[in-house]
Image (tube, rainbow, N blue to C red; front, side, top):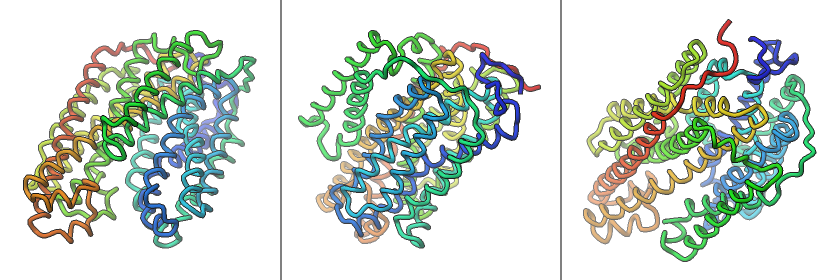
Length: 510
């Protein structure tokens, strides 16, 4: 690897010794997996947790507390890394995550678990940002494509393996080990980062922008609560949702205004003057919107309509995740060897749009082979976008803003996933209720009045007529959700057209 300080390589042992860099990358991938795997493992363990701790009415808060804390803390971790040095801030986030994991495993009631999950989420906010920013420091953008496959592989492994690992741990060791399993993995990452990662130490004299941090936290919290509660806990037009929207908008407008005045802003607005950075933030938002919506509704469709087992829900996504992994690796290699990348956002936007439209065509007679092919098309599109968005965003800012660039891009993707699950979920639920009423009358509507998603056991208890009606209802619901996803994906394609192919910093392969 050629030394190129302007591109982000570090003139230390860590930058000159490939083995050291590989060890650091391994530790970073473990940390990234911890952040991604957690919610997927916990989802499988939740029925057992509720059975022991009770508090079913607070169930959704176990996930919401984690998501809120992660989203709200993401920009702060990025800024702290820029101000005080990446290594120490990243190690702190690992420690916070591990403390939250240990406390969650020791929780004695649902209230404690929710609180400890929030602590865990605070740490998780720094894990993903830290990984991306440190890679941005160590490896020039031109060479970063080589490592895209590694990151995409971790993502795919977390999505496929999460439910399987969660089920296995819960069945054999108990649900508390769903949290304790993070401790040895986190310790390995912590030791490796401490021993091998060498980055310049920083000490900023500027004060932390506490007002900006508070305004941003309030704004993000309000947005996530609107997308989490809207259409489920409260009607979209209810006073509570309207209040949250008002608070969120006011806080974010105040945040943007204050960032123009703050001496050391949490999110320097000048990074959005770069056309590519702004476009990559938008594409990242759309990718999160589509990806998490797809991973939520595809297993529902395959379980309810195609009769697949819930235990293997992660494996059902293999065509999409496998295609995403392969494409990400190929895109990374091509970007590294040629230094050109604009073709990938264009191809990704087009493939994602086509794939989601194909998924919207699925009905009660669609075979697993056909749905698998449709999923693969979506996966090809996401593979072209997942890591390229971060690569181009980081290439569009100065080194001093690497942390906030990474955290902002990550935040937009997180918010996109919240909006995707909420809006696609609202369409899905509405269609399921309507079709159940049409096909099965009052009894059918009553079967899904609490939730539009039924477990396999609940589905088996329904009369044959109601079961068939539910299959048509789920098919109709996924049609609406994926059609919306296709329409949103068109925006990613349009945004990609305006991407300017700025040369990637750093030398190509030697």
